[in-house]
Length: 77
Image: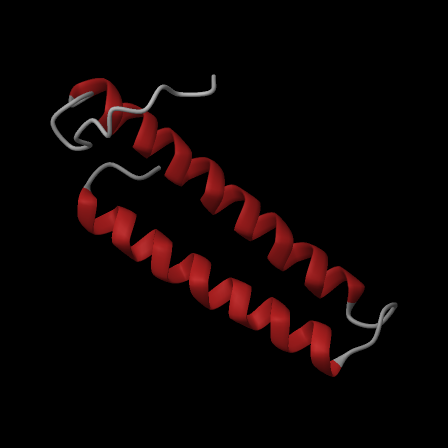
């Protein structure tokens, strides 16, 4: 679980590294080869996305307006 900004940055770097590795595998191995490896990398990517989202949600709860100045636009949600 990500608990601070340093861990957040580390997770983002790990995410970029995994995405790069997945792209390399997809280029070098056609569909059907290394399927379990690709699936494992996709699972790790999904896990990191979840952890980043949880941390971002907790940061927004602590500092809802101060980190992101208003643009004057209305959110579509």
